[in-house]
Length: 359
Image 1 (tube, one colour):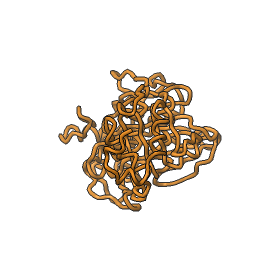
Image 2: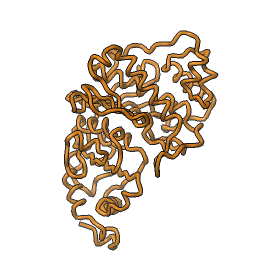
Image 3: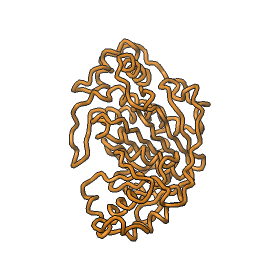
Image 4: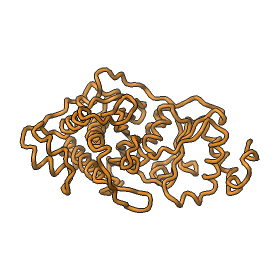
């Protein structure tokens, strides 16, 4: 449950509310509340299964609530909401994280959230999961990226932030149809803000209340990128998450330039919300390197539907190139400027006095 500043309140009432909302979404009655407070060796879902003997509580149908009416988008929103409530319930409670590889952490919340998402998608689709040739590809449980419909899932983007108590992380789900991005959702967990897009239907943001999912007093906002044209007036997000990126002298030199000669740069530690901020008009550009399909897929659609441009670092726009995980998202007007700077950059941009880099 987010407080007014986007953080997670520490009061007992707030924590109880988060648990209750998670239980509501998970379909468990209040009699199971005690079990939800324990992250045991079998995980949250096992605890709920052991303790929750009452009837499940169903979420009201999202028909008529969403800014875009689409079956697959509704399912994706429901699935991300369940994962986000799990985040809220355990934010600040996870003191340890497993290291999957260098600078890449894993918590039990990641794995439990992905299980929730997968089960929700399959349950909501029913027989259509097989009949329509759906496939799942997740950050933690893998899968396949081929099928009539492919659901690309990141149950917790920004795990390091989550485990360190930094309130900047979210849930990502993209749906591809016949090899093209079709729908995307990024649920900004602690703020209960939901970013959604469907191909050729635009991109929107709304606030969730965790019950009907679309808060009654939340009027969806259509997203639009900025109209910034001059580099010196621009504001940028950057993302380098592996130490190998530090050997990319062109990118690191570009970052030094942007840091010095624009309104600023931010490395916030979670690519999904960072990229969604381009669609919202917060950042003029966001560039991220060496990530995975689950980190960038929904946001590529969000930014494009909000009027922006998304490519890889070679300027390619096709889905395979985007899913490789190194992308540049911009308001469109600054895209060429970004690549002009990248082309001019290099190792000498890291060693020369900064005043000599001004263009």
